[in-house]
Length: 387
Length: 134
Image (cartoon, rainbow over all chains, first blue to last red; front, side):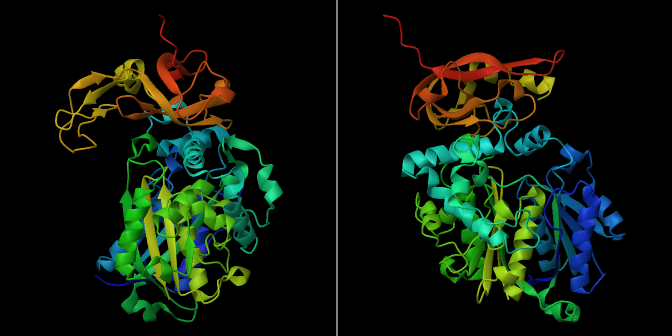
C-alpha cells in the first residue's frame, strides 16, 4: 500500500448561494484544487454528497460535476453516508490511490441546502435516521441530538451553559476564516438568549443550513514531487484513514451517550498513524451540535465520560489550549453543508499544516486530526494528517 | 413513508409487535432478521406490553414537513419494560410535567396527515401510565 498525499485544496465560501447551482459551486472548488495541484491528469472524481436526489432531484451527481468541470472519460461516482459523506468519499479516494488503482484522484464534497424551504430541508436531513422508526415519529436531527443532550445533562449534572464555550470558541475562530458563513464572535449572553430549536438545544448549539463545496486532490506520496511545481507550498500526507459504524437508530445504541463508532475509528487511526491523542496539535471535530463535540472529545480520548463539556468551560479547546478544536470555525461558524463538511475539515487541516491559516493559525501545527460524523453517531470517519 | 411501507409496519405501529430471540431470550423491537445482541437468527414474534419509562425527551419547535400542524410537540426515547428502546411522541401531558424516569404506556394516535386528501398515519405514542383501578 502506498502513502497518499494531498497536493491541492479548494474551497467555496460557505453561505446561501441562491445565484449558483450545485454544479457551479462544486466546479469552483475542484478548479481551485486542481490549479494548486498543477495537474490535469485526473483518474477519478469521487463526490461526497447527501441530499442532491432528495432536495434537487439530481442524482448521477458525480458525472454531472465531472462533465461541468471538464473531466471527461474519468471514473466518477457519488459516495453517500449522510453527514459523513465528505470524509467517506475522501476515504474511497485514499484507498484508490493507496492501492495503486489511480495516480491522481479528486475528491469533492458538495451540498446545496438552501434552494428548498426549511421544512423540506429538515425532512431531508431526517432521512439520515431510520425512516420507519425514527423520522416517522416527527423527530428531526436536532431532536435526536436534543434527546442525547437532555439525558447527558441529567446523568452528568452538566448545566445549561456548560456547552456555551464550544459555540463561543467556534465563532471566535470562524471570525478569522474568509470561507466561514458567520465571521463574527458571539458572547455568552448571545448564547444564553438564543431561541430553542428542540430543548435543550438552542440556535447557538446548532450548526446552520447552508451551501458549500470543497475539494482536495490526492496523489501517491512517492510522486508528490512530480506535482509540486511551485503552484502551492507543499503536500500534506494522510497518516491515517479509518471509518466505523454503529446502529443507525439512536434508540438501538448500547449506550446512547457514548460514540462507540468514534472510539473505534479514532483508535484505528491512532494505530495506523502511530500517534496518541497527545501528539495531535489540533482536532477538527464534528461540532454539528455542542453535545456532539463533548461526546467526540470523550470517545477520542481527550476527556473522561461525562466530562467532555469541562474542556469548553476551561477553554482547553482554544487556539492556545491543550487541544485546539474547530480552528477555523468548525461546523458551527464555518457552516455545515452536510456532504461537503468532511472535505472542509480536511482542507482547513491542510491550511493549518502548511502554515496558511492566517489569523487562525495554530502555532507549530505538525499533526492534525479530522472527524466527520454521519447521523446521530452511526458513521464516523477519522483522518490524521501530517506535514 | 409510502403506503406499502405503512402496511408492512402496521403491526409494529399499532401493537408494538417485536420478537424474542430464541437463543439469548432478549426482546427485540422492531423485528429483525439477525438478533442485535447475539447475532443468531431472530424470531418468534412477541407483542410488547406497551409499558416503559422515559429515558430522555425534547420539546421540538422546528419540525419537518408533515408535522407542522402539531408543532410544538415532545418526542421521547422510551425504554420498554421488556428492554428495547423506542422513539415516539408523548401525549396527554403538559410539557412541564415530563421528566426522565417517569412511567408511560403506549396509546394509538394520529402521527401525521398528508393534506386534505392524503392518508392519515396512525401509530404509537406514549402517555403517563394510568393508575390501575382497584
